[in-house]
Length: 345
Ligand code: RIB
Image (cartoon, rainbow, N blue to C red; front, side, top):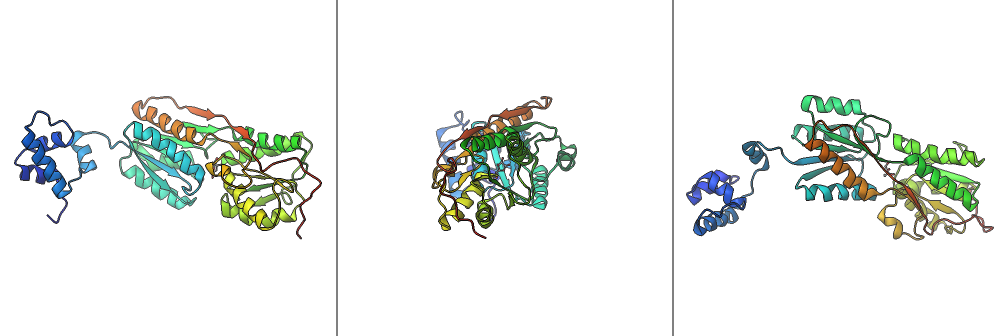
């Protein structure tokens, strides 16, 4: 048989009804003879029959049991772990997550979102750098698809999962100040999502409270929020006279660690580096990275649970679920020492 085998083909070949085949293949065939069951299963295997999920949904008038997850960059361990959390819940609830990674490209984000919406998805988890709730609502239109905003849309309305980025930034700053650092450099991306702005604000405000002012020109290095971005920041960091660096996320911090190692800079003896997120790689770089922890897996499970509650109850009130952040001290930070970093001009 060249064309795709349908349930009707299997029924015809087995000499039974479509309902009989459907029941046997769904494990509800006990009332049919062993011989009929065997014949149907054998034909399924022989022709490699796979049920068509969309057709099945139409027949059963059931929703597709799919949730769409849109993340900016799946190659970031942060979003890899987040998606793992979503999958854990989805698997438990027998739902299928469709994962889309938009490479931080606004056009691709919108296109993926439209694709998901047109594929009768049951709900959406959206971690978008660029999309506003107004855009999302416009794309969803009259379809009434529940969605959860994750991470980026801090200041907007709608059901959301988030962490306290302001406090996270503040924890990083206070820790470095308590170690005795006075000269600091910050690594951040050009385009800052709302949660990132809060993270940086927490950092700057806390430094100010301690009498330390960061000069936006001199002390802020702008590079992409990624390992290559952190690596690219190396020269600017080496030119500064900082004793500590706050990287906007762990990916950036890890890229910087490599750049510093290549220049023979000892971390933390000559320069302290603190990241943000607590991705699993922090334990595997040298030195192990000090960071501010976001409970990433919990954020994924939390987002999925919240979405499921909205799918199951369309009248559920909007909810904001906040997760705590905490400082995780490892080996990349220490008090500033007499052994200064050689300044490169
Ligand atoms: O790339 C991951 C970063 O982007 C995290 O810090 C997360 O909070 C998101 O904003």
